[in-house]
Length: 188
Image 1 (cartoon, rainbow, N blue to C red):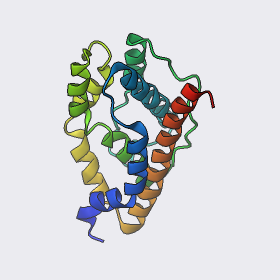
Image 2: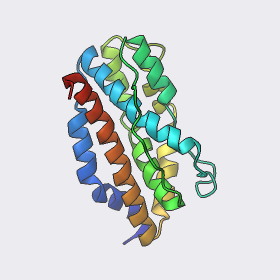
Image 3: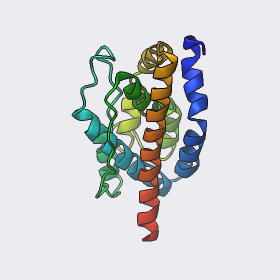
Image 4: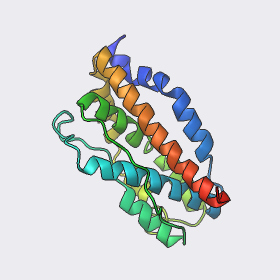
């Protein structure tokens, strides 16, 4: 496998997981669906970000970290009268550098569409000061994805496999979080 194409290989290796999450998240077209999106993201990001705060992850990534947005998500939810997650899904972060990159791939990948999502949020009457803080925070780091991709492209084939396993685990945490929001709404 060509290391320069690792980012594309990782995308293919996690395509099914990503599609499952996208199908579950859906699109927000009104405030109610936007609040649902916020609540799912807060549950997902809260659990993952909390677990990463205690992990020793800076050495292999030369100080690079994904944009952490849980605090902004919580503020956005409060702005719109939503509910903060009562329980954050547990997430046991991997400890090796290659796997950590797989976790970061999912977290930072969610920021790629932040500019598009910001336009949709603005159309709903939201702004970086009210209801869309987390999108503004994600959109404010334009070089972060390129730096992450460079690190992923440098992985060995075995490292890419570890990153893919961790990415799938991270997608599973997001799917669990969004499923929990939906279950709560249906009183499962």
